[in-house]
Length: 134
Image (cartoon, rainbow, N blue to C red; front, side, top):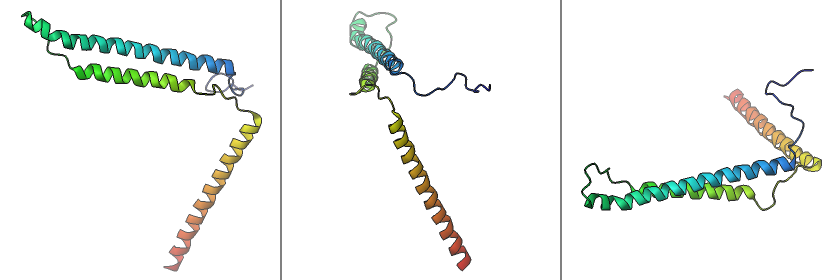
């Protein structure tokens, strides 16, 4: 029996429970990533606002003034991560492809492939006929 080069046996679609678990895990990772970004943005913003206090205290080795834009960008990326996590949830959950749905999708793909092949053949024949006239 021959094994596939990619490893593992592909035996149809993955079980819906496993798909849901994977989606929830990715959502959790995105949410944790967003929380970490928000914490770091808050820290950056705190340093930016506390810089003036350190300068007034005449610290010897005061760092250069941090950018408020850094906190804004970190917050924006955190919001994007939260938006991605919410989009992964979706309204209907996991949709299992049924045999009828797979047949419909395969039929559509075949009709598009036939249509593109006909257009390419018509284009080649029109180029060939114009070349013979010249």
